[in-house]
Length: 169
Figure 1 (cartoon, rainbow, N blue to C red):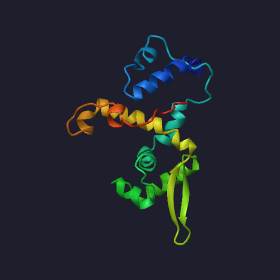
Figure 2: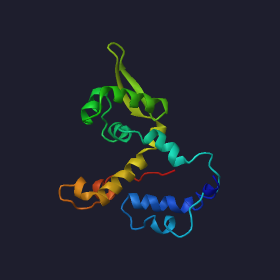
Figure 3: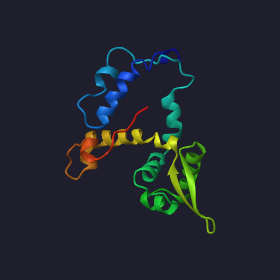
């Protein structure tokens, strides 16, 4: 894990730039991250945080389920199932259980009999919002031909002009 030492050096510089990037600002992360020098953390990792995060977030359907619950407010089992063609009930149950077990979502019981539950993001789940916004930003810029009918690239600020600033921690 030697290569990870010092990786977050300059994090206080990168986060404001990421914030501007997500909100359509002119600065990008390119000069800082893509320089000739490796970006290494100041504290050595026991395990790679990207690999660890992908262990949960990288599973098929997971980010789309989080999108539905967090952004689209589609929060009931059958609503989520209808919103994601190809997702089976069995797999949705598995993903919801995994997300609950990892602390990203929690059930809110609406009615006990018959049991009606809606899903909400936890505080930990809310920390995935900047990740999802990064995907929106990337896809809207680089895959605009697939994302938009007019095929014109857009920034997050173009898409969500009234969006409040996202706090990145």
